[in-house]
Amino acid sequence: MFTGIIETLGEVKKISADGSNLHFTIQSAISTALKIDQSVAHNGVCLTVVSLDEDTHTVTAIQETLEKSNMLHLRVGNKVNLERCMQMNGRLDGHIVQGHVDQTAICVKRAELDGSWEYRFKYDASSGNVTVEKGSVCINGISLTVVGSEEDEFSVFIIPYTHEHTNLHEVNVGDTVNIEFDIIGKYVARLINR
Image: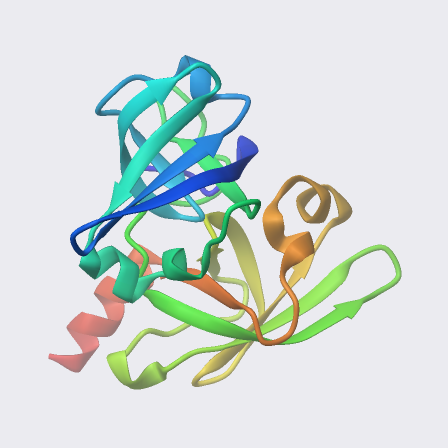
């Protein structure tokens, strides 16, 4: 389980194919502290560390992960939001994040405001995922509060710290991001649809 509070940015150093899987080698400030078989969220996708080498770690994304996330869009040099799993004795600063990306969304608006940024995202609502105003959503692994919510779009406001210390500053209109909808909202929506 994760909180959606990004620890650091990593940089993609290598991508290699193995059948339908992709291995991503990431360089980051936390790579040296990781262990083989540890779960780490990469842009909100929970992936297992499969190898370590000095200041890099490698993770593997299987076909289902590649189909549901923006991992296929990653290129060498891209920045990736990283978060290690939550410690049981720690504070839950963001919200409950599982690291299981539900789907992707497209950035349809990016506006610099006076001291913050507004981002708007459009997604395929046919799977029943929903957002609510003042509810939580996870974008590329970042726990954020929904400001505006419609059936297939939502917006968030970003403070300067989050903009600077995550890969959101690289997201532009037309870019694809990973979305994990709030787990409590998903359970409520499923119960109502029964």
